[in-house]
View 1 (tube, rainbow over the protein chains, first blue to last red):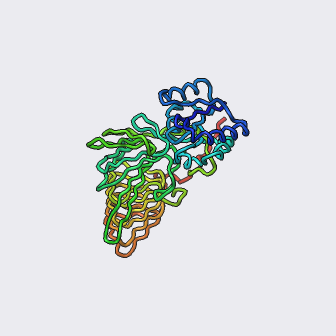
View 2: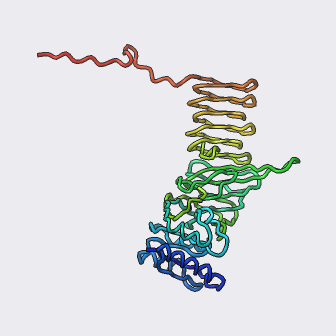
View 3: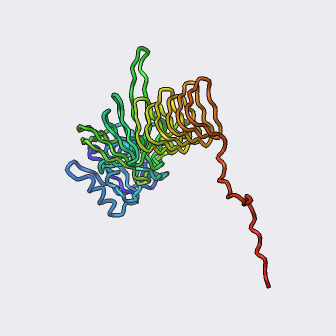
Length: 245
Length: 132
């Protein structure tokens, strides 16, 4: 049984046509199901969890990355399959999962290529993509076995799923997260980037002051200490063939 | 090496690692490491790297400074810029002209434990005599 939940921002009339096209295509493909509309003054997590409790086997987030992150949070430890129909703002997560925008996303959903994906957790909050923080003075302790310290200014990123770049490909099915430390060295001849890459399963990041940690490029949490771990194969996601892993 | 041809673990310049560093796959060190390194793949120590650790890896290419015991199951390649002090054991060893090596070097594949004196290796136990 497919259960769709529409984000509150889709109530805007400018999305009417997009939604109508999606619904027509879903009906054509025979995968139309119950639609639940999230609203500003309703607890989104509670609404989505109610759908799971009522037996939704495939939950489909219709909206942007924020909507999809709410769904990840709501799905929690259940084995409910999660799909995504991106509408509205540009979606980083949809690109990573190989889900196109518009009607074509319905075909990906219909193909139902389900993959078990790792999910990261920071201070009890889950993330799919990555964490970012600017804390050069941070000490990171890995698996209680070794620690890293950084000399100079650096940006820290903890990745589960990311676009391939100078730090390589991140595999969200390997049961690990990766700490990426980026530092720039300036000289007369220009700047040179130094990239460190440290895979881990569990880490403890701490600093002397409160720092911001951005979750999946959006929401931020502020703390001095962060407990970070990977929960292997926790999410069951519908992905497309163009996925970036 | 990983699918994209790069190492799974990289310690770049400006990063210091201390402790028991267990690495799945290959590792490139351009920064500093202190403690122990145990890698299931290859090790590459860059020219500006400083390593004070006991190391176990499959193959090693060393261009920087390493002090500690180095146990390599395959080939250890000490480039001309390298400075090594400690005990080195490797199946195959290449030392570039100019490389500094201080310590003991043991080469060749690891030998199996020697049998006890007086016993033939792979001796087939004699069958017990049957008595009627």
